[in-house]
Image 1 (cartoon, helix red, strand yellow):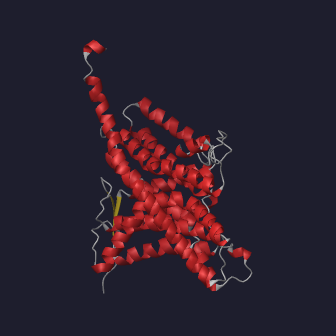
Image 2: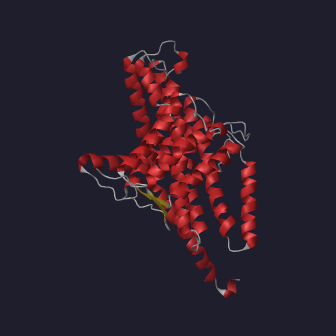
Length: 398
């Protein structure tokens, strides 16, 4: 009989962000499944009646409603993984020449390569479904399709100063992400800037931003920071410990959901999300080992996780307007845009709609998000060339 080994926890000088490890494969899988969960949950809410509206819902619909009831938990997973990947990467590079400039370029290109075409596509879909007349421009921030709303959503000001663009309520979480991208380097500078004045300026800016933002955004920054912290932690343990962490990470949100709690990102739910976020991060820290692709199933799992993860951002941003477009086409083609939980065929229609949303998002990914690294290299190239041009200006032209 094997003796129980106490897990060994140690800090690492660098984050483990390599793509060939087990925890990296799991991170990819979580990113993809989280985006798919959000899309499935919102699609179900848009085309089926609410569970509470039905007096005696069929078992099939109860199962569907339960399986698509973890959208907020999926967003928490996004925050944890974002902290791990984005925060961990900056921790590795912080202090190197140009690290903060490259970080700013990386974050801006990551967001805007997807958001700019996505917002324009939302405007086009709004015109198709009759929600907006593009010939009548309105600069009012109260208009979901206004220029002010467009700019505000690009700057992460949705839910702060403007509403989510085009009524795309899923965009609320991008405000959190945008400000976490800003706050994290300020937090590092507040402790590690080269001068006292620099540390004071960074700390002042950090406090001012935190005070100006809605409290839930500031509060959930703590979860994002946990992701960054755990990217530097390695846990050596046995399969029994990993199994326990997996049960906690999966079981706790299921229990909370059955009890009807933790179904938002309000301050009252923070510790509920922390309760499963910690074991999930600990599980990832315990899986920093090479991923062994055991047979066809292992290879398919790795490829499927990578495929879903690559398009997860596009799927998250576009699924709401795509649902609106598909509902519009349903009204035009068959005279209805709602499904019945009592009709077996409508479950197949739901699955087809979800598959169409994934397919259309994949197409948009290929057109835009897949070009992120190319755009990023080009922007960084411009910044590298600028000092060279200034040094080679002829003296007679000054």
